Image 1 (spheres, rainbow, N blue to C red):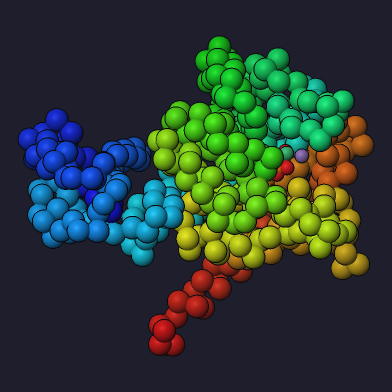
Image 2 (cartoon, rainbow, N blue to C red):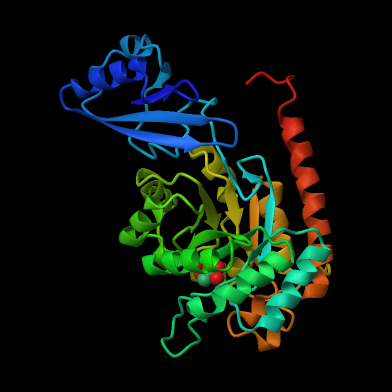
Length: 373
Ligand code: PEP
Ligand code: MN
């Protein structure tokens, strides 16, 4: 059961304390308080766990601080929708808003290699009005002999360059909880010129201790990749781990599934699940066309497969695109074959705008009130 309190409820007030005393006395029921700080208001939700079936919804709703009570299913308690269309969703970070209606492009390097390439990337992003990017410093690699990323040593100059080019958020994978601390220290030392969205990669989707550690901090939002060999529900539960530890500023990223059925693409493109994730949860949904397709192959119509699948995800309502670019793909230390060229960014953005407009028109079409449901 979920109790949604009135916005900005004062947790030191007598009416709030009365509610807590009442909850403390419920037999076999534990409660967990979850605060969500938005740009304009603070929302408090209280989750009741345990033997809640006999509880009286009306009685709880009669408490002054309670706005409404929702019976929730076991699944995705915090991130789920639970048939309540009015549950607040989304979050603000670095002056940007992320929810199931917004759109953000995170184009950048799969792996940070040298300052010159990072600067070329950021300069082109700024020229194209972009304020987000992706920059991998900690790379989980199949082979222990492959380049593992520069790690914490590159963070100061990556963050400085981001500040110089007006980048507000960098998506950056962490593979161990110590990386969060390293990122935090480097941002602190450089005067926080930019922000970071912590990425949990597909190989770590069910690394529960990492999820718990990243979920315990609330400074940075999290981009969680879908596990490439597990069910969608299992991956959504992984997202719930983050939220259950306190951080519900989570974006869910589809990146393709590992199966020979997807060949010749690197992974089986799974963007048909964009609307499914939006229906089951309140998370914004990201697509990663680069790791899905894995190449710069092009259709005879002249369009790159990466651009085709990007359009497929966006036309279905994706809220974010995480995509690999590189000034010299042949020199990239990781995933060069799938990187788009900097000269292709402008056209790629124009293609995204076209597809976003198409999505908006589709939403309008299907919400026209002339067909009874
Ligand atoms: C990445 O985005 O660089 C990455 C390694 O992705 P994934 O975890 O989806 O393989
Ligand atoms: Mn990669």
